[in-house]
Length: 306
Ligand SMILES: Nc1ncnc2c1ncn2[C@@H]1O[C@H](COP(=O)(O)OP(=O)(O)OP(=O)(O)O)[C@@H](O)[C@H]1O
Image (cartoon, rainbow, N blue to C red; front, side, top):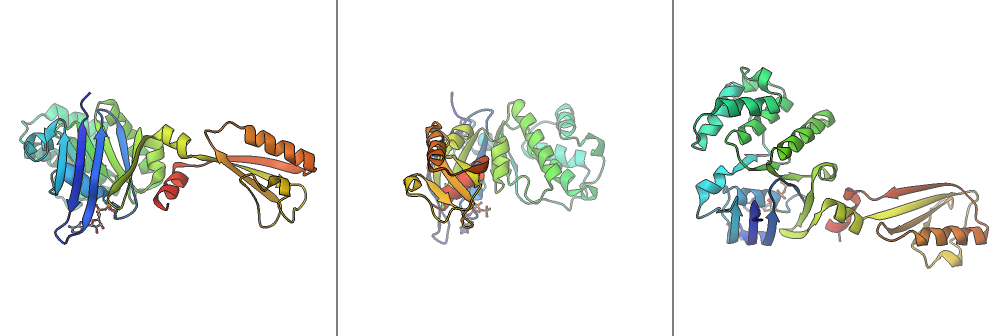
């Protein structure tokens, strides 16, 4: 299957000589939700802007929906909807007019049925005759998405879709994005909220200092790099870790009342059984056990600070 987006050996050097992207290779497939994670300044917006034809690439080849973004700019751009980070808030237009006008910008014939569907899908139908400036921040964001979908793109970019949005609206947005995917739209989102990638993405790409560090199926990433932690609350204080335990990846808390054992999620649990047996042999009693699995956030922080 040909990917919806194909990026080969892409580099970007800005006019001031700054190398924002280095040899990026990436393929994104039809109907997936791909999250691009990276710290500030990693190059996420630069990458998106190049694919959308807003920023020129320095080297490499990029295709969207099978079209070369340089040689077949119009066709490539038509296949893409972009929801930028910034909200345009000062529109005197009505929702209906703004979204219909956006479609026209892509040279597409009017299609009121499609606009109606987009507005209904985004719960904007009741607001169609309202001026955009009169809407709440959340509704304005929906209008931005509706504009991006007005020309029926098969690829949708969401650059920080929920930055500064409250938790409830964020959940609404997630639901909306899932529905879009069900309608066959390929979705690429950048986010600072790792929870967002954890919740939504099928695959995750991590970018740092202009380089892709990894691209992985979310579940595989979490099981491959995730750690589990077992915490044992001790009945009696320990002054130091007994010699029998010093070879294990185990720590004693500062107050001496807790043992913390860390192990790979993928490993079978033999280590835990061994630990509990050793504690029994040593006569160390515990009153509670808790386990915790590392979140994508732990993994991400580990990766970008390596
Ligand atoms: N026009 C430009 N000229 C020179 N350098 C630029 C230009 N635009 C961006 N940069 C630099 O390129 C790097 C990547 O920026 P980019 O906006 O792509 O990062 P980002 O990952 O999207 O960050 P953020 O999450 O903060 O939006 C940054 O160091 C930025 O300062």
